[in-house]
Length: 490
Ligand code: HEM
Image (cartoon, rainbow, N blue to C red):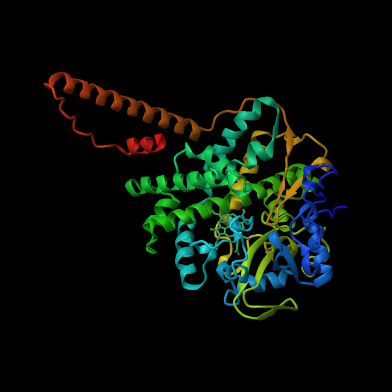
């Protein structure tokens, strides 16, 4: 039995005999506490939150992977209190007693999310302000028109690939690509990096055995971009961070760019996927297209309430003994911000079917000092992407009954598995930006080839003219493009 999410869809439970049942993880663990992991929890996270709310109220004790104890904050107000009181609820995960007592093994699946890193995400106070202000100044330099230009270009590129077929699967062929492709442009990365970064970022968060190699690829791409921007700064986030008065080191710039790429990617992919599902299935949106009730922006607001792209944020560490939501929290305890649970707290939403258009008091972007600094960018990528997709494919429709759509869940997020669609097949004109970019790349390649030929000719001429032993040819000064293409060949 599964409990439906507000959008009415239920997550799947593996059938008997499926390998997922081989290592059975019981829903209740030591101390009679409910596990936030295992097949039952992952099949129906919303149902689990409601059981916990009924049993404990606003804050519930739960077990994480490895049966480490944590508090899951379910109440909307209790989440806001934890988010806005960094003196009591710190972002520094090193304060968690499980870390202090060396209880978390090096292969724990919790580590990619909770292990402390020297970035603003895990900092408090003055250090947090220094790093975050640099990021904020960098991100605020982008305007909606500039972002839309990139979104239009990449949406058109992606739709060109499937437009002539009349059918597509919009999660793997659209939603999973668009945010990363746009982000590479905002970071000032060369076009060539985009497709591999999409794959690497997807692999990284899945925690597969290739995750380490994927992380190395992301880090190497960022280091190359930083080297390029030192030589030739541009109007992009990397150059802005390098020039910021906060004087970030190259390592700090790299770590923050990596954090931005990963923070931006998965959450925006989920926002696009769930919003697309809503515009394709909700009659209120269809009514809008024929002069009715719900705009695209309002659909996004509703999704941010009902299907937050991050179900929870892990998390906060208590700096002292305190009380939250009626529970006694001890110094060193770990807390999870239950964004999905807080968004459906009956205190703020007694009737889940009441529309919330224009109401932005959901928890999906957090609140307080760590509130998402990229929310406008994420929202805009999603909104512009869907808008342009619907313009290119005006008769886009779901190719399967809505009841057949499924989600997969992990402890911090929930993903729509597939969104098969159909539409009238047609060729899509290339976006002028892509045409210009392709021409630029062709010109640059031709220039590089000419330079290479000239170097070879000069070397041969010098060889022919000089008596043995051969004279050395003076090295030519490397152009920006030479440096760049040389880096690609490594
Ligand atoms: C649209 C989907 C997005 C959602 C739902 C989302 C959600 C969140 C949430 C809930 C937090 C707060 C975490 C906490 O309190 O500990 C956060 C932080 C953050 N987000 Fe986003 N985000 C989105 C898109 C983006 C984008 C597009 C960027 C970058 C351009 C970004 C960059 C960040 C960064 C750097 C932080 C850490 C801020 C800090 O610790 O001070 N996010 N995000």
